[in-house]
Length: 333
Image (tube, rainbow, N blue to C red; front, side, top):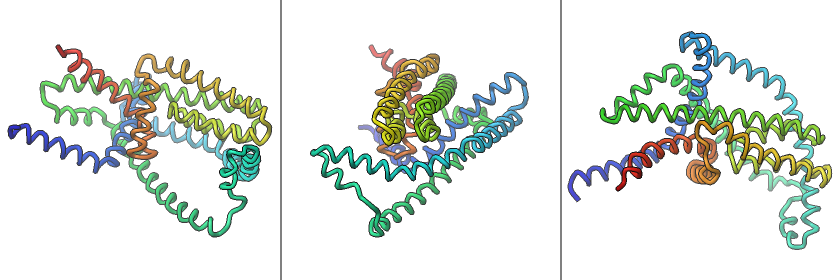
């Protein structure tokens, strides 16, 4: 091993260590990039219609998003708060129902005994310490979210300057290819965000309508959970189905079966028709790739890693296709 190879190896090792130590900073930065791409899609659509300067377009987009958020908050949040309280009142009944079902299965008697009949102070105190830890984590996540929003606004204000900065630290012979790669990543990520937003909104309204027609309690809360978790393919829709199933179980097994059929129909409609159709012109991740990305980043970074796993997989897929496949594997003789 010559000195150049040794130096390159040590540099690579140091870069890997530095990346791992700064993983949360990089995670915040990537989250800001994802959000800035979403803003950029709206800004470019607005500029194509009005030809106004970018700072003014960004301001108008932020105002519209803020007003839309306020309207949604005023329309939905009071009902959601009511349903959350109702969910809390239904929880004891649900626990009793589950214990009754489990008690009829001899092989699950041990599981039944592990479900507490009531809470005691001895059990509440450890729970209180966990809640304090959760509150601290929530505060930290809130600060990270504010940083992501601030960075996203700064990136969306002048993306050209940040692109030029990236190209400036790229070797001159590769700048045109890196610039094209950045364009493709932006198109793929913007298309993915647009498609998933439409898909999640559609699932939210369809689930809300279906559960309301079936007269399932807490239909709005269940539909909101189903819509939000649509952004996490494979894992999200399956986990989201648990809440409406558990609530419908309190009414009757027949209603639970109807809710299960409804969710299966909507999940398959979203997974095999709606999402592929919306993402056909950008990047459509295979379910195996999506699941492995979520599991890998979830194990490394927890919930934030799961949330940002798919946007990162979209970017990596574009990079792999343009660099690893075309420049290396296709040229291999």
